[in-house]
Figure: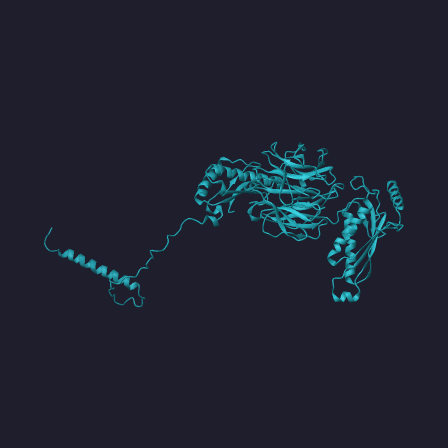
Amino acid sequence: MNKGPISRSVVLTLGLMLVLALMLMAGCSKKSKVETDPAASTTVADTTQTIPKPVKAETEAPVDKSPDYATLEPGDYGVGDVFFDFDQYDLSDEAMGVLSRDARILKEAGVTVLISGHCDDRGTVEYNLALGEKRARAVRDYLVSLGIPAGNLRVTSYGESKPFAKGNNEAAWAQNRRAHFERP
Amino acid sequence: MAFLKNYMLAAIFALLLLPTASLAQGRNSEVVLDITKSAFVKTDVLIRDLDVLSGGVESADAAGLMNRIVANDLLLSGLFQVGFSEENPDSLEYEFTIEGTVEGPLRDAEQTGENVPITISLNLLSYPQRQLLMNKRYRPLPSQMRATAHHFANEVIYWLSGEPGICLTRIVFSRGEGGRRDLYVVDYDGEGLLRLTANRELNLCPSWSPDGSEIAFTSYRDGQQSLFSLDTSTGKVRKVIGLDGLNYGANWRPDGSELVLAMSETGNPEIYRITPQGKIIKRLTVSPAIEISPSWAPGGRDLVFTSDRTGTPQLYVIDSDGAGRRRLTFEGRYNDSAAWSPGGDKIVYATREGNYTQIVIMKSTGEDRRVLTDSRWGNSEDPSWAPDGRHIVFASDRSGVYKLYVYDVVEDTFRQLTFGDDPDITPAWSN
């Protein structure tokens, strides 16, 4: 290799690169102006000019990313309902799985929720109010055993009077045999 | 028809025994008609158009209204057949006639537009002798017309049967869907529907106080199920009791001094007697079972209620101290919502057969069980007795939506009481 002053080919390459860079910069600065005449000669942009960036105030509070639990329905932040067999109030394995997940969310949220028990409309209004309460209490007791403070869990029952699905069939009835979480 | 002729002779003979002076107050103290006997023969009554002596359209309308309501009341009682003229297609053999007069306000009073009472005079006479048996005079305001007709019909029924009529009684119930159900009241003949609450909440299981001054009911105001009471003369609502858990199914003791209800503060529903001010008098049940739906016997000494201590809900009787508990129902896997008859001799309740509930009636000893409704009736629940011990109101979804129906125990007939698209449930019949 020639170790003397920079070779001609290198100078040429560098020069080409410089010209290219200048042309690119000219092209960039040209975009910010209104395009009137494409044939106009390229003027080299003043490279010392910079587009001012907005200054973010250091004193701004950091954005709170967790939901305001107290104003939301528990279903909206992932607390799922559990379902029951006809005339039963014991928790199935599936129900316990749902409640385990619910417990993690409720621990994080730290708010008081209302557990309401519901029944399908077979049977009497009065007995279904009592059965609905048994369902709600079963859920409450299980959540307490998972570490949720009892004071955060209120319980009520609507029996058959606040159904989620209408219909005289098992599909609707199954939807209505449940314990539901709501904002008190 | 020898039986009918003999009956007519007996009736006329009995009436002739009455002193003619006792017109306004007098009534036949012998029971002429036994309203609960199933082989009962109805009394035929001729209702003539009332004579409008004075007054304009208002009087004529009042006369027509009186006729229609009195006739309907006599028919609904199940004791009478009614005709409107001597020539009648059903060949009714009249024993009595009802007639009277209507006098409207004088012409100048009419023109001043005041709310002037109309004078209505109504008579019950024997037929064909036309002996005056009873006369009643009324001066009702326009808003009191229906009540006036009902009052007179009651007088006729009491005069002839010795039993008070139910023409002025009303039924309170819960109407609405989902979480919004309000209390409504309706006259026993289906007219005069009135809304009592409008609070966007679930209001249900109402119960009349014996004197009609209050309606106790369960509501979820303030997010908690509690027992409230509505003052029927002012419309004001007060909270009676609201312990932790459920507070529902209240019923007044027949003397009006206290209520009984189910409360689950101890962890599962138990039966409690409380004062109208919400103080606990006595807890009647202690068990891990569900114990609900208490209903007083007319003497106020015993109660019928529901317990599922054997695994499914069944009816039991207990006394007001919580002693003497005995099981009443052994047929059917699911029995609830019992109501003791005003005469103390019967209990009506709901039983679940398969997927459907039906209304059952039995003696208060538990014998002679009879199912009143069948599969055509869909679900039938929440029975409540009329004070005559002959009629029962209940809710049924036979039409697709729960509506109220009235059953006549003697006639074994039904009539629809409420109409419309919203479900009607948990009715209670006033005294």
